[in-house]
Image (cartoon, rainbow, N blue to C red; front, side, top):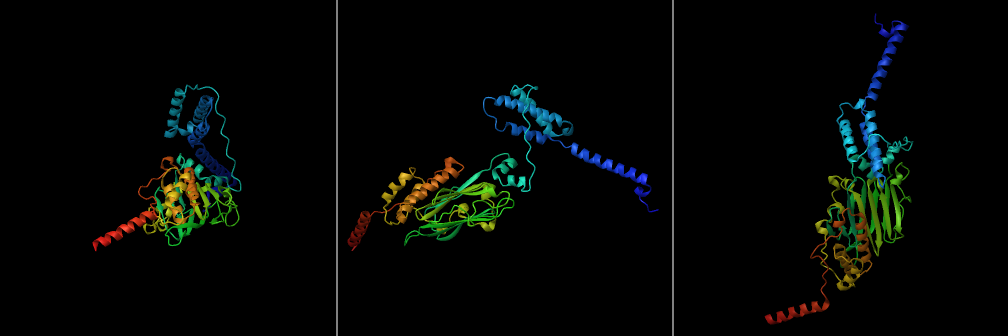
Length: 405
């Protein structure tokens, strides 16, 4: 008593264990063989028809349909009752009729198989290509948003609002799960509320498999073409090449591409100010918590920090002259033109025309909607009262006072 079935005798033990092994293999085989592979057929068809061009595209399309049909026939037994499979079969028949494709004929060459993952991790490299990953998941490319800060500074938010701000000191432009961007500003002239950005700090936060944390810091007359640690990419991780930095114009224009989050940043220097522009995937721009509520790119300048561009204080260049200087670079009298006039009048520095022009050029490259490139705001242009007109007003007021007495 107490003995198991497999311990009664060597022959019985061998027979029982053989049966158990056979049953196990049968179950495994049934599970492996009975999986419908229609999704693979679909993927091969999409890959074969994705970039058809030229005079032979109709022939290539028919080849792809025949390959698709052949693939569905091979997996017919395991796909019985699968709605996706039956939908594909009927769809192929309709498409072949529409395009006059014969059922017999050449097929598309088989799609090359992806290389096996190496020690660096092939899959992680895909994770670090945001656009490709998004397209694979959602079947369409991602949407993008644009933000910029330049000149006084003037801030164009992700929602196309436009503010002119005083914001002296350090203020966050961005603070989300992937990026932190801080601008530090200083007064452009004595007895003026206007400020300009003198320092930019950009932190690309650590992301598993893609990049180590990287810090980029720029100051006036110091626009490096490398991160703070001297590197020019995201580090030694498998996706390190998904973050790169490139010098467009030495000492004036640097561009940072972060492919792993679908983001491109431009940093410029024009005169004694720095400007910042970004094109970010919408999903990335919105990746923040309630605690990260102060972001100039998201909410614009706080109301207490906003300045009206109609109140210009003369600092060496008259408004009429500033308009002529800005008109050379900015023929359209939109907010970029208005900001240019405000900055030149307030600072007395004609180099601010380059700041507004550079911001507009970045917007042309980064803004996802060309129709929203220009923003027009009425009643906010620089209105500077000339000295003769001011004397007339003063004299008139004095005469009025004398008449009253």
